[in-house]
Length: 265
Image 1 (cartoon, rainbow, N blue to C red):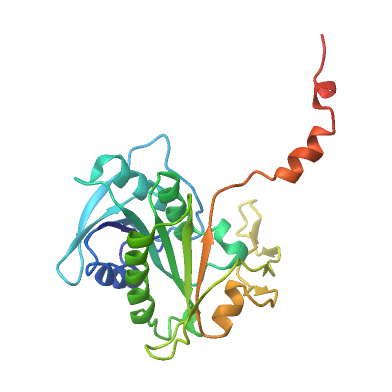
Image 2: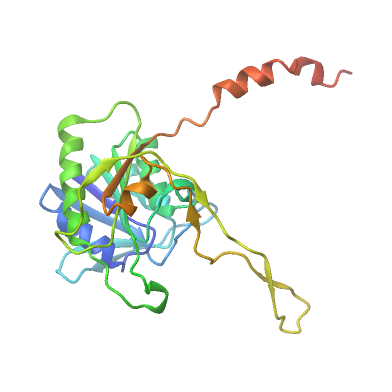
């Protein structure tokens, strides 16, 4: 199996290194990832300028490539011929923090997996909960269980495939090996954001400064969701596709007699 590994936390992320090592038991692995943190960039791409690519060496002596672009750029590089071979699967992660519910619309991790399925490649996005004191750079990420789980999921994808263009969004509790209480298929839950617009002191240059994001969000408590699975100390696996058209909405808008809205000479 030819596997492309990427992420949005950057080429130096320990989560990227952990999943790379786990996937090497499944086949040939290439790593192409952003040269710096690109979290919450979504499906952004680089246009109007060239991409700089640099080979890097990992702690185990293996190598990969850093790109001064986005996670989607990294996937497109691989699919369009940067590698000597075309990937059979895209694995994005392990992201340092969960991507649950509505969060996936912002996530660069999930965006890279989306690009895989847009190009006809099976894809897995993988994330892990943060340690309690992650903002203070304290606490440890326990990658072992979810990295091994991801490698086995990749094997399952190769053996069984998926119907249509579907990616698997995997979220794991941050627990040592042996403390994860299984895995379950889930649906996306509903996030409750607590963002506030806070004006910050200016610097006397005539500009106004605002802080919006940062407060820890909550979520609706519902059984069967990705949030609920993590709360039960389980790995959540959510199949996601890219069908955005709302069919009921089409019927409603048809009733508006759109031809009558077109200006006539």
